[in-house]
Image (cartoon, rainbow, N blue to C red; front, side):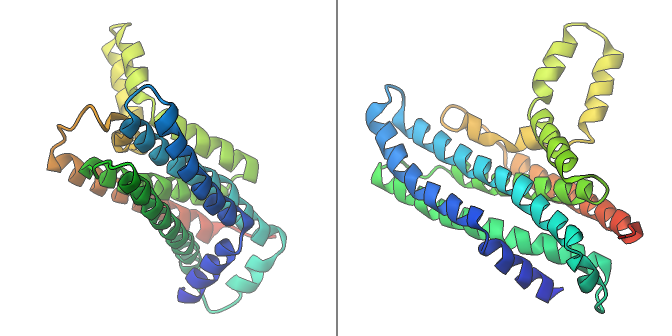
Length: 252
């Protein structure tokens, strides 16, 4: 499995999309500094919101498109037969691929975070603890999206995997809005049904603390601990079902 992790890491590092992300990271440094001179609002919040959003958006695109393409390329080019013909179990293949991609995400988010800290230092913006937790939660969100892409790609086409994963990403950020709309009907059955459905979706709304940085800080330690464990548990469950489906999958 170690070999799969390293080979996946090297394959993604060689991908042109990765260099595109790094290029735009440097572009965003210049752009965020420019925002400081153009904005009429709180420049600190603009810079922080901009950077955190861009880190998440770029890697969301990377997870959805780069990974799904790499996986289907292995199936299309029949290289997966060569891999699985070796003395390696299918769960090791899944976990190896997942950890290899995860290592790439962690590395690039780390590099982008360093650039982010440089921008904060240039602009004399204090490093709030919520910024650190927001970066951590962004990593959790991307890891969950990656696990969902693994899960759906085990039995769906490339396009459907991207569409369904994107739909889950959007809906998981919108449940408070959906519940507000449903509450207007004052129907406890419908409200209870929506809350039950919400448990099937990842906790992206709770992990989305970047939207409140600068105007809300009253988070308890339990909030961060609970959502961190919730994210890891959700991730493990999705990977478990992915392995179960992949073990029964027949490649032709």
